[in-house]
Amino acid sequence: SIKAIESSSKEDDTTWLTYWVVYGVFSVAEFFSDTFLYWFPFYYAGKCVFLLWCMAPGRCSGAQLLYQRLIRPCFLKHHRALDAALGALGARA
Image 1 (cartoon, rainbow, N blue to C red):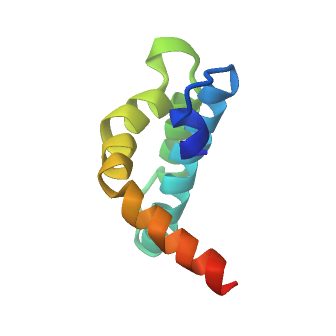
Image 2: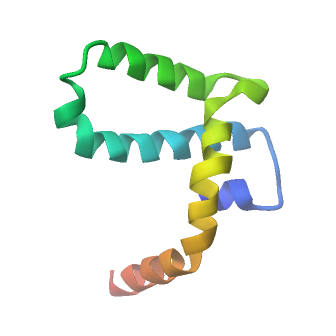
Image 3: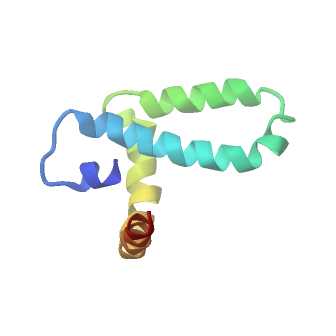
């Protein structure tokens, strides 16, 4: 999804690819912290509001904001190492 977002061909799918990247990062983080987070009152209501904010259309989209400020800089910093690791996994498979 990140490769599709960063490609030169921009289509309507960029919005949803961005959402799915943010949702995937959120899901991984939640997997490791869910044991502690579910004890907080209104955790699931807050999670629902967060996901709705991420799906919001236009300039107020949380997914666009999180992707541009957090995920994209981290990806651009480490994309060569990720590509090399995935290439080595593909060769071994």
